Length: 307
Length: 182
Image (cartoon, rainbow over all chains, first blue to last red; front, side):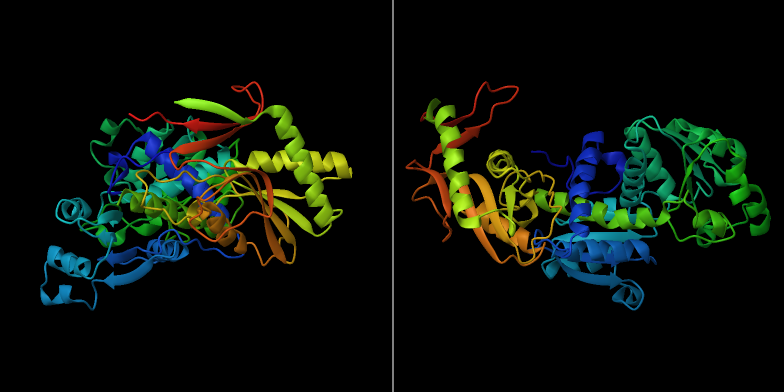
């Protein structure tokens, strides 16, 4: 009988390789539940979960909500637009008011890095980080690794390149931690302006030429250009970015091996990925989304058990 | 800790054979009947029953394994969460007669969870329960086994352990384990 080493899932950095394995094994069982005629188990029927989103989200929010409902938890949703946050309420007050209504777990997304870490020091409920600014997005990294494991049997020894806007990406950072803990080799690739200055200190390879990166890797995790987080120009134009870093079918055909294409979504079709790549048999983008629900069920189940 | 054999391997063979004949008496050629072993330990009983039935009937009987972890009522009441096991049911149970199989019937809570978990796969025509050991006077719920290997009178502090021949155990045996008072 095993349990997680943490009470909150704030980031992949804080959890161990054993935690990741436990989450995957539990998610295997939940994936099986999701393929049954009745896709629901009563495990969390005495638990109330608040989804607190201070930033826009479609996939993550739906995925968490579905995971919570499949576990029979009671769910309340909060989004900062149209809330009292606009009237000047502080974050801690907002969350404490939600908790006063007897909520056991908080799933939160915020545009400021470290927000869930700050909250975890002040409140009793379990917290799941659903993305904090440009810092971490742990459940995304877990479902990415889970999808790689599903495709290849294991993550250890695989070569994974993360391509695109590494500088603004919480998915990239969480993925680097997750993949390294599982023994995969990680490379980042993108325009030098979109690579963090000290990224090499994390022990990842750095490549500026996307063709070389694709030739090296088994799996390419392609990221979106996060225009909304850019305060200045990092490259001349989107057209030029696509020309140098966009991945198309011709490029994949020119490789002498089969690689797997992943994307955390939302895809900007025709920018980082061409449509024929996004919809090809190389792509496991929709499997990632499917696995997301099972992974989030596993995380919520294991954290709820910690109380 | 004291360990005492309550059913040895010869008796266990006879017991399994008797239970199989009782099943055949009620289910004939098993055309409408399926067997579900409850994970983790009922799986081994189900395998044994399946093999014995196959040798008597000359054909395989559909057998699956059901995990009840997510349906248990003691989640968050234990110190550590239960680890889930695989469920493997590659047949339909809708309209079938289902025989749930477990090693020991104690409080009845696992069986309740199993009934709950099983319903997710369809609505069976009827459900029966087969156990090797029925511990008397320990039930928390009104649950009764249809087929029983042996009834055992035991204290709450005692434990019944069914061991199957394997790498670490030389032969099949059922033990009654008594913990010494400290």
